[in-house]
Image (cartoon, helix red, strand yellow):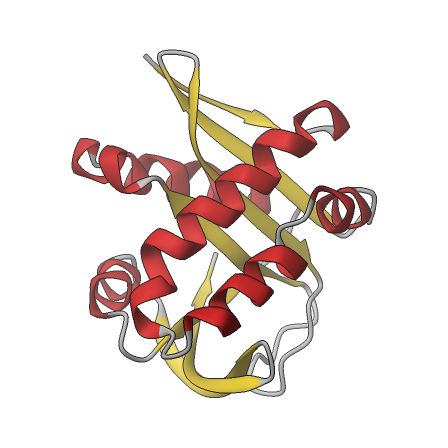
Length: 171
């Protein structure tokens, strides 16, 4: 059984662990220097950093469970600025990750639909995200879901830049 819940402070350990593992699974092979990857994971997905982020009212976290086991999470940032996103009433899908072992269940589509519904309920009109230009599986997924290329940004991993495409969709 699949269910999705809004994450709270009680979920900090789960969010930090899911963040660390899913980022390493989905992006670790793209990072040339594994020390950079390790340093980035330590900083970006610490329990303390996650606690700071979950207390920011602009950040909304969701956890997707399969048979009561947390297998993925998403982070939505309300009214996030990017120069190529015209709407000021937008949200950034900053993170949507599912553990590799659960990707074959095709729950990513269900999760994205849920997040889009939540954004519409908040009366937001645009969703945008960034995706590493070599992450072809993710790019295909977003294009299938009507996200359009609107720009680029440089994503830093321990000080090293990685070119990302910025994709946007009207809700």
